[in-house]
Image (cartoon, rainbow over all chains, first blue to last red; front, side, top):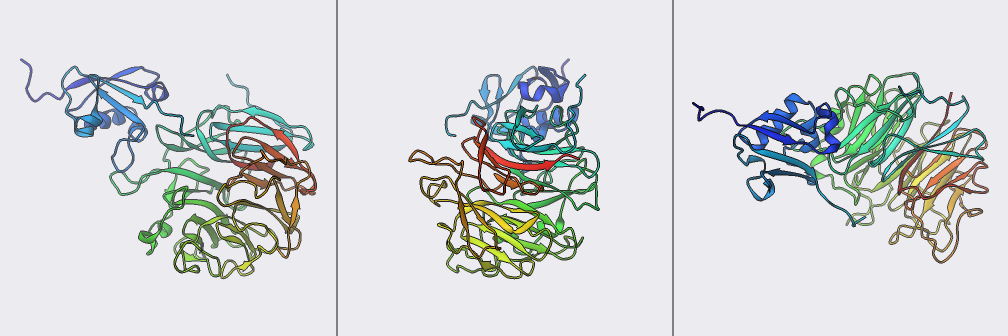
Length: 100
Length: 368
């Protein structure tokens, strides 16, 4: 029987620029109850990955987008967005340009 | 397996940091130049420098657009790059976040292994092992006035570091827009060194701090002499920054970013003053200005530089440097991707590279 308190295990799809840090894997599996915990877990397994995604102050970098099952967490509860077992998370850099 | 690139001793190497990558230019005679890209492409490379005190280690400020800013180093002239084991990062969960790395300066000749870096938010970082481990200078980070520091348009950036080679306890830093600061005790405490430099944008135009210093250099033979390009003027100090003398004189503008000097003739200083609104050449001639008498008057150098109603070129604070040869070469990189060079102290200039991304910095080294 599945424990109600089990920490969710999720799949995280990494952008190309960060795959080298994860042994050139395109996706990894980590556990956490929120996006914040997922990022901490990524950093524990692949040191330095958190700094790629978040400022030292804890906020998500402005041109990093995190999608949970297709939805941007910035329109949910940001880093405190809860995750559920089996979810798929995409980390992508923003499509940005044209300004300079 | 990469074969390490080899260059002849005596080669002049320019490291050109741009909006999209780091480039190398090399020459044996300062007439013909080879242009090479490096493996650091795509990033905003604010600054790069070659440290030859113990081998040849290339440092670069790799300020990525998406995933953070990093100081990296290469021992094969940019073919492969290493991250420090302990890099430049503020404490997790604190109030500061690394915005950009602005400058990297190898330490004094007699202290191999020591490397300095300046970043935004303004702070001085020090490595004692050739860039593998970095720590913040607490004296500057905890300065009692820090809460009052305000950024310039480019950020609250520590962009210039001068470690006095004659005095291991003394160094200066330049911060926009805080001004020039000096330590006389090895970095434990810092004082402001802005007296008589203007901050015309403030209610008090001569405050103790708040000036927007853009760049400064130290006289190689008289360590108490400094030259400064400020947002509001060009200045010279004869007393290590205790006070400054306005040396704008016949220059057509007080505003500019870079400054460089001739190591063999250190009363010869170069600036590129600009239209402060357009931030490009004052009139239709792209001009480098030279003084040969320590700032008593200035000459306009235009031979070989572009002219015309469509010429509007700007040079950023790290976009000009001089080499250490005699006669000196001076190298000017524009924010539109042109690189100009002189091998005769500025009497004439040539375009040695074009179509580069916007140039942030140029440093010159003669390989040993």
